Image (cartoon, rainbow, N blue to C red; front, side, top):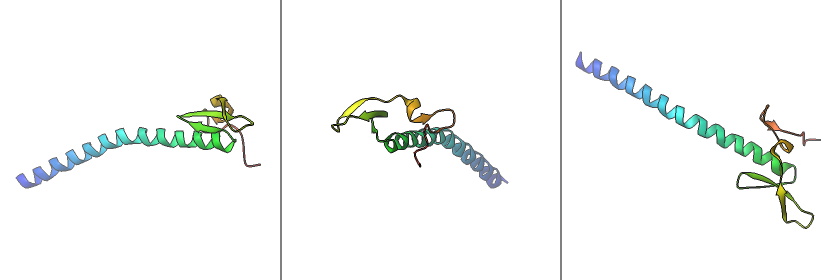
Length: 86
């Protein structure tokens, strides 16, 4: 009987630990995926992504000013602001 109670306690502890790990990991993964998507939208429009910010590229190839996020990212739908496929 004591062995069964011990196994039940270990199962509960395992489930709690899995829940804690998931609660920490899920927001981290979502943040990384969102940042990667923003980077892709920025670079696909011919801009440069650096340090979490999108910059325009000058005619001579140097980095220009910061591009407004709304120009490359649609925050409401979490997609690129413009269709770059066509």
